[in-house]
Length: 127
Image (cartoon, rainbow, N blue to C red; front, side, top):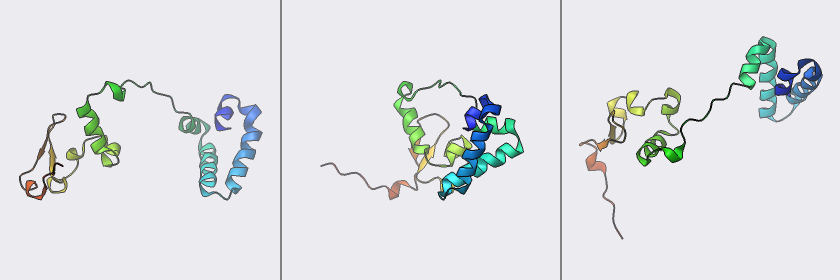
């Protein structure tokens, strides 16, 4: 209803009002919160609401299939960490004592184990 409202406001304003009212009175917390958020952002500024709900889409320029395995490994090592938020590798914003046994250099894929951490590593057994 929100996206339709931005395309044809006079025709969809009543339907959007009904949908938001139903969402605000809904007993599901996520539906209630989303409807309240949309209502408040519309109250603040319609143009801001349009940019929030329908942001301009960016074309994908790099696909995972075209990247080397070193790059993919480096990306997945940093996944689900603050690296995603800061958009930097973790070694750029963590202190040396908090980095763990791995030390990253600026060169992509160059990982080494610090000497003091090498005593903590248990060798793998081959079966």
